[in-house]
Image 1: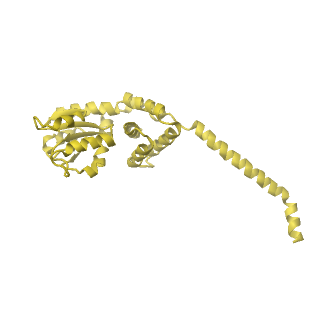
Image 2: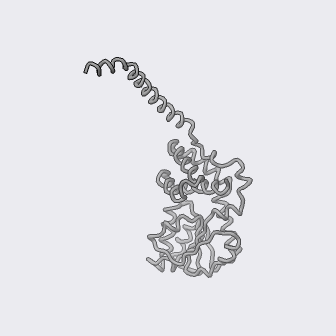
Image 3: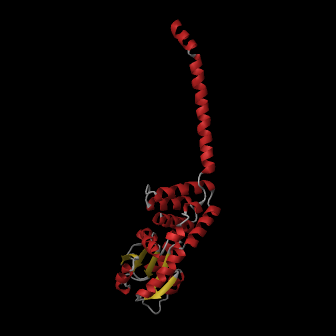
Length: 254
């Protein structure tokens, strides 16, 4: 026992050294976290490359933007012509209200009112458009119909961004799509969204959101994971989806 006590008395300096080292390391990591927080990127504009406007063109926008045709008569749309032009088109002859979220992720939707919702064939489109607006307010919707008059059509068309009578020509579709694409992905629109996000989103969330965008661009997380993060952390879902659009554009332009 005496020998053990003598050993610890002799190595007291080592214990003191270890104690000091522990304190210093604790201080170091504390300061490091603070410094990282101060200098972490919290400006959405900085994630947009300087050469973005030079490389971001119509062809790239067509690769990024996703278009859904929700209509039980898809032959009313010139799908082959649009796909040949490079538009990313997906057709849904019928959906259910329970699967609305699958349609909400599209940038542009051509939406009929009747015959498209299994749950409600007659007026399901009216319910669907309201739900799409709730989930993704940034989405662009072109309401379409072959009817000349319908008592429910007024409210349906009122909730849409544009309205067209079926069948549609290729030129009509191009005009609608290019107008919507400009409203969603024009460089000036993306930069305005970035500035708005800097103003409206709390600093801590901005830092986390930008970190998530960088992971998405580096292909470390999926678009679904990024979209889910934005919806959970950005209270304004319109702004959340528009921020996701910035990330998608940057990823394709990089």
